Image (tube, rainbow, N blue to C red; front, side, top):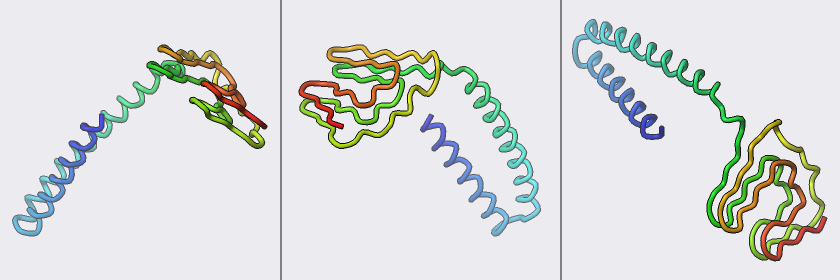
Length: 134
């Protein structure tokens, strides 16, 4: 997706520079006609991109949270105040958790030492030697 973005930005910049040079150094009337055609094509491309983005946005996976690999951590809610990792500590007053942001959220973690939580996990110590003082 990043390649598509940068290639489109580069092509549009090149076309804009070419049209400006054509208008300044060459035939202004011809550049005007060409810019009208280019504007129509770019407008149509913008419409297609907007429709694609709107259609793609409706196919959400329900906010699923997935993590994989050794020591992976997946949390479907607030993770404020957690000590994650070997010899990690959280001290002081812990803020009030906000809870889960949506119902029916799928949370999964796979791998050696992986941890998954589908709700509010504020104030928990995860990992070896983890300690929470609040």
